[in-house]
Length: 164
Length: 101
Image 1 (cartoon, each protein chain N blue to C red):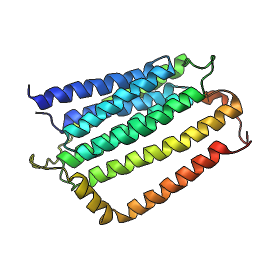
Image 2: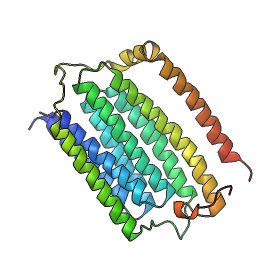
Image 3: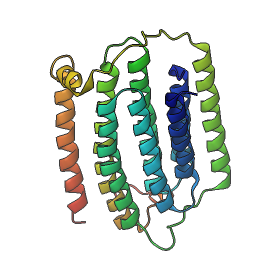
Image 4: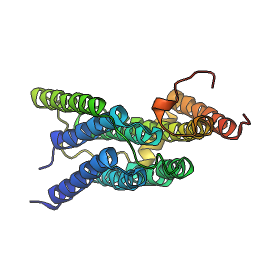
């Protein structure tokens, strides 16, 4: 087994196992910390794919931003009664059935499709190439998402401080 | 050799787990974690296709857009969760069942 395969299997196992922990752990704070391992595993997969810039963005924004926000939300909304998560029986079974069906359909599509493959010596554009794409081909989505970020930040600040 | 399908299996499992969390969890924060798992699966898919299928580098750019959207969503969702908790005294979606709180 090559190093690439070894790192892939370890990262994939960490990602999937910790995602299972996120979904099924009884205590919410444990789910939050399992999410850390999931994000780290996905960042490792980005690195393996040659997208090192995206791996850095994943660590900075997901682990440094989203995860901290979620942990804040857990801590600020915790009380003795609801710290543990209750799940009803029938809904749980139905949810698991739908999720299993999704996996089966995805795997069937995956094995039945003949993918167009690219030459193996492809190199990621890197931060420089991505920046050039933002300023040329993707200038409209780039401006739109900057506007959306502004609106989201203002809206979040407004809602969080509103007096009821 | 690790190929396209290996990565797609991982992202498919990640997506299904996120879907499960959205469907069976009752706590708002746990549902948001499921949504984040789905975002991660989608972004991983874009990067994988950008690497293995001839599409130019558009996949990586789209993955950055997805990550930015996830962060904006988390910020707004935190504000909504705090208001919900203040209004209903719990972060359980089943109890938030009246409009115009």
